[in-house]
Image 1 (tube, one colour):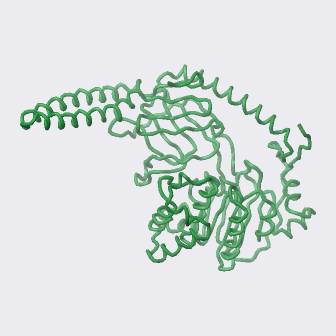
Image 2 (tube, helix red, strand yellow):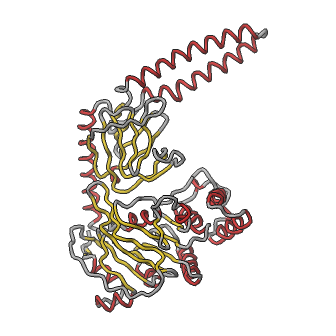
Length: 471
């Protein structure tokens, strides 16, 4: 039973066609079960055989009823303290934390694509439709993309994808709207209290309303471009995360992307890796559009380590690396050699046969790094370099970066630890609100803005203020 802070809202009762079909299935199943038992009774001579076979038939019928049909008839979304749980029978379930939701609002939709039961369950572009009917529809706009398991309408072979909007339906729209308003108000109040408490700590506070903009220095690099971003933009609902951003990353370069939380770093990196499609602009890798039709081979040249690991947790580390390598077309001997090398390099050999779901976040990030390197890509992208990695792992990664640079390969990473960026980066770009505020080598940046180190420069350019009050 849900607690007092949790409310259920059904979503299949208004689809009378679905309910009639499910009830018809129930009647047919009962008739089939009775006929099957009669046939078994006629064909069997032993009472024990009759009871065993009849028991199996009844068990299978009840399994279908309680596992598939009943959950659909009772399907409901759950408003809870921690977030909104979206459910559609046994076909889909996920929980979206309140902090990830930009807004929820009613919407009029007419979706014609349905499955055999009349359900609406598919992805299209960056939208996910999880509905039993078009009536009582709501759209959930997310602050950042989430990975959902659902087929793509245009490419049914694609079973998973990142989405930024989720469409659901509820039977009682009016009550849902009132409950939703109450939950969001309570959540916002708790968030404000948490933020007020956090301000008592001695931590940097970045001004979200800052509108200062600094012209980037003229780029004097004469190398060969590997990655080019041409006026790319992306927004979540009304929030523009990346705004007409243009960057160039050279071959054989270690490139650092720096910015405060919410600056658009992760969104930019997701667009580079093919997880998010820019609303406008071009992304070229070695002169080829990574979003053009048939660009799959181009994207294979990109290795990506996300801030939060995107892994199949029911696999072991060794299995995950093996299957990923096979999908990338690596030969067996080369693949096994790389797997063994990477597992040893990141101290994962003792845990290689354990399920990834048992790993700590740091170990999961190690697996993500191994996956990104398994294909020896031309471009390695690492989001939040120092997140969850211990000092030894950071040292290993630094060595990998330098070795890749020496081999003529390219590294692009984001992060917050200024000392690491100063040590590794050949070129640094500072962004805020999805806009490039400054770019150049460390020498160029310090010469232009007069700061002695990257941390001072960063705080200066992003209008950061440090609260020195002690609570």
